[in-house]
Image (cartoon, rainbow, N blue to C red; front, side):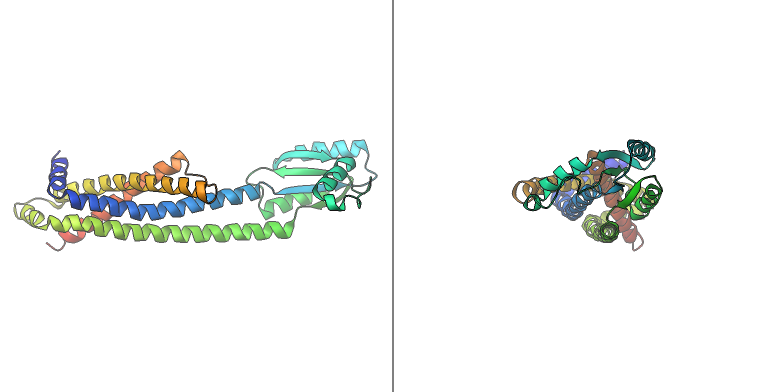
Length: 281
């Protein structure tokens, strides 16, 4: 209760400084929120591209119905496979004419072979997993060829790894900058109460007793700043979606994690600031 009382006293004495601290924390976290919004939508876009990863297995022209059934049974039994669709020669021809209308006269009946379009489950779409599945498919009876865009898939995953590494590096950088900004903001509060801290030290107050109201202050300011930053990020999301390009906002669990991160940053920054000051008095 004493820590709460000291906190309320500090807020009443310097309300403008407290509000300035919350706004400073909010804008520091808002920068992280904007970066997170970009990262979430980049990951969503990459995920949509990844969903298009599929294998196409072509049957021999003289494959029998039994061969086709045996291949279908084998493919549907693979644990990595999400879905298998059989495409007859006529269906392949109709699809080719639809997608390449200007060249429809080139395609004739029986020009394209029967095939299977194979979709993979999430977690099995990386180049190594796809290559293993393809190697197994090639051993099935009546297989003429198996294709999956190996070069495209490898380049896509290289790009995804680069994006993930860059995102992690920038995210950590933003977090460090936010801690510095939040620490500087809370340090102003500590310095404003420096005479009070010195008097408390003289009358025998322990470091833990002195720290508690500042830690609580940092925690609450982190939460308030996090809420304000989340609101600003949502406004930015609405504006971008309406006037630039449709975007996806954070899932509730990510938003809650962001608030928790704001509270933690406020707590850590407050602990560092007051600890540094206590070592000097």
